[in-house]
Length: 545
Image (cartoon, rainbow, N blue to C red; front, side):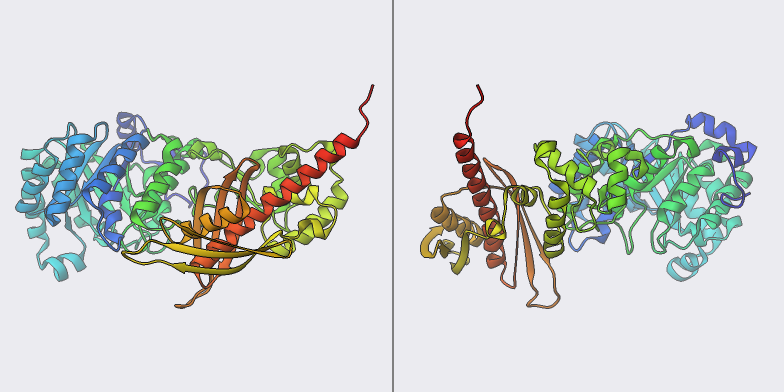
């Protein structure tokens, strides 16, 4: 019976009895095979350097993946060098190289991985009708010969050999059984069943895996692996379904990057198996606390942004905006969180303060900022909060402080206003900025040099306002389309008064940066004024005897 056709208490209860000994031999561990450096890199606009690949491999080792597919050695001298470097340096995971089922590929792969303490050759050939007839132009008998010769050759060079039946999802199941049986009999220790083009559904994929376990007599002699693509958005679902039906290796990539719509996402597979261990009854050796760090490294080095609503690692994955959700999480995290942010390496979840936030959340944030219960007139404050939130969209901690300390709208007015900005920057020149700022009805002008146009601009502003900040984060987004798109700059900076967030928008990036920086300067100035007023009032207040 296929998964999903009937209700079951444990997935293992639905498996054919012949699979029980296989599962016990694997001790219900799922091998995590990371192919970010091979399949993931194929999706990039430009190749990673050998040094970048090595840096990623080091992090994958810290993540404790079981297998790192380091590249396709025969494809280029650069890829051969990268695989060799990784094989020499990285210990812990199996280091794997990809090879077509031809002699030159297999020999090149064997040479690249030979320095690894745990090497693996991964060879493959297309098995679907469209691959055999249109791409390879070979008969099924010729494909079987290729499998026999290729796997045997690989085994001469390496004890750990993986074979993949490319496009298995569209391969006739009887022929697929024959291919798998042949690969195992010739020495393949792992046999991979790829859904190369993301064609299958979970029910279809389950049927393929079930048929292999039922009809391939030597199936218990190898680990069955799956490699699913996300063309129809079912890569993770198909991979997990295969695990529930006996597969014990999943091939995946960090952030789900890969050809076309990508691969099954490593973080989704690992966390699903962890959170729903009650259902799958399996585990992995992955150090989940390294997931977020690994995701950010891949995002930055591969220049592939992660969508905010991406499962597990998206910016909104542990973010709550709804007042109802925020109230629930404050009372008991499990009301709206099935896993903790700490479990993937985040410090905490994020409660977005917007016009949708409830008064309970706003009060909680004020208390965390150090205000006493007696200081907070919640009814009055919440009305002012809602008005500001409708105007600004997002409310930060420094905005809350300003609201708490202000009594009138004048208290929230900006002290400094940018009047003029001129920047000179280019190759072979020293970036210089001239800034004019209006404050208290007077104009002040300064100029400064810097490492770039933005750096020079902020230094000129610092000279006028006498407030030097440590910029911890700088982020630019295009908020409209076209060559003259508006850019929104968000700066997070640290000052003695705390950490502040500033935003600025303009068609000119440097101007947007200056406005964001000025936004922070004005926030700090308001807080300084509030603190000064408070000190004066405290001095005027009679001391108790």
